[in-house]
Image: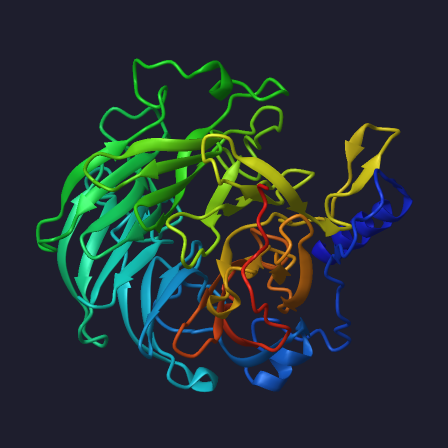
Length: 484
């Protein structure tokens, strides 16, 4: 049935008109690979078979595992993973619903034979898509957000949400140290340094699903405490949103909520969904203050109610471009996460003046969001989730190369040496890991181990973890200036 839907959608795409010519160097949508023997994409257990059903340019596949085990829910084909971090040869993988609820700890010394060591279950009734690790102190922070998909239900009331802290000095025997619980049941992205966890989550006075920023002091990991919070006016009960944060151009309500946090020096870059980007000064983390904003909804629409109520509009990630020798970044990679048609894409912003951010360029995938039917006045898109997701910078590239997870479109490598003209220089398109609840691949995040320069790519559908080596051209200089 899914194959039929894909074929019908591709047929429709062939007859609609293109709204505008493809931009110079525009990358193309992933093409389906023939599977005459109907191989199960969740049973490609040898690396050569996995490579056979993958597509690569300027990447080498050096390892893959589905990580089957007792941590996978009954009926799950493999481990779904969102975020990962690596300390030495140990990887910490945050499971992704609906297949895994907790964190898997894995020895990745040999990428071709990765070995699970232990599993930390999430709190009953929660999902656990986000984690961070303080490698020096060997403390893992794991997020917990209410989820009806978890088969291990909370007993006697609401789920315990927030963040738990674990001693992972012995990765085979992690020990829970302490827990910070937030009211309101929901948490999301997080960042961590040697003293604080910066956590998106609901608060005591939050409106439903209106996550704000919690700054949690973990100096004493056995007793983490709230040190500060930040919210956008209108998120709390009794407050009104500004005119900019009320309605989308199509008349639907905006969703203003903290989604991801990235720390860079004394600043925190928040992707705040329909409120866009919020840049905070955290020179004193107990007193965060706004130093810049970029709100683009409206004129752009959010994405309410698709593919499920409450998911997913506006800004997903605001990633500052590395900037050696400069106190603050001048460029930012901003990704949307829209599952509607047309789906989310990528913007390159100049933030030399964070109060007056400017878009220098955008990144799209040809055949995904550029087909427009003038007879209906609507875009026509391939089936499945075709949105951009999380970017991650190549540490050796001076900020000029990043790896962009793009759901069904896999992992794409972009050179932004000239931020006015980004160029795709490589891609990794995994086997098609469609499941009942999601058509197409679920390429979620990439993480580069700075010790080995290997790239670890997660799949949210149960496709496990893929290890890549980038073999393409490596920029030798930072991006040229945007503002001039």
